[in-house]
Image 1 (spheres, rainbow, N blue to C red):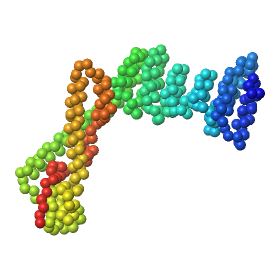
Image 2 (cartoon, rainbow, N blue to C red):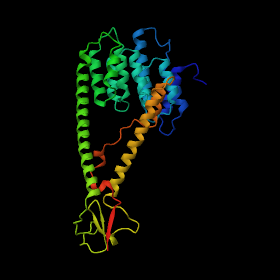
Image 3 (cartoon, one colour):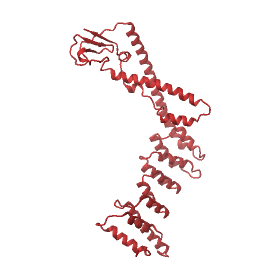
Image 4 (cartoon, helix red, strand yellow):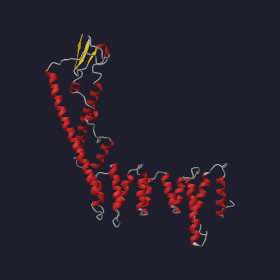
Length: 345
């Protein structure tokens, strides 16, 4: 207690303790030393320039203590001290250490530090991409300040990561009538071009699926009305010449009976792909039922539409069903009815 009324000597004493390599760091010591560094002592000097210089020296020591990997201070207590004493460098360092990136952006927003907002988004945007959305909302509401350059940078990053649909961006920017259309014009044009490409790809897939469907119908009808001729002379499994007993599948694969499992009733080559197609068909049927139920609920009176949409999103029912192209191509005959086999003894 000999240093209670003498902060300068107490500071020197604690600095001496932490400088000793054989003494283990203590949280109480680091917390006390940090508080001493940040404490605004009115008796330092009556000269403002000298007082400011000493304050900067103490804040530099405080920042070095915070950045010291061996220090064992309480992070939350340190943050309170930095905020209480308006120590900006310490606040931002602790926010970064605690990965509170939103708070870093908010801190710069409260200080109207536009350049620092952009720098923070660029630095932490890979870890939290929603920072760019937060920046867009902030700059859109600055009605008495020109922020076209900042908005251009933000929109470029939002486009890069596809964070918001064009309609939401337009609605956000529309809150500020002073923002010119030229700020968002190029962004909207690019998004529309991308959407047109997606539409063209979807139309090509529709055309391709239609052709495949017609071909499958022809193959199925041919299988029902015409005799199937098996011309394979090698076992699809062992590649040896076929000899009786032989098992033929309508997918045109042929096997020695001894090369098949005891309970195997499907072509081992086509079965995995057929299973994918059947699962795909089952998913389509399920989605159709869900869509009908969703439309019925949304059309009902006295229903909270947002709750219904949120529930369906949470159940993953709006996820895009894989296209048949992603399932892989398969011959129409193998997907039609692989259980039809002929055995010759």
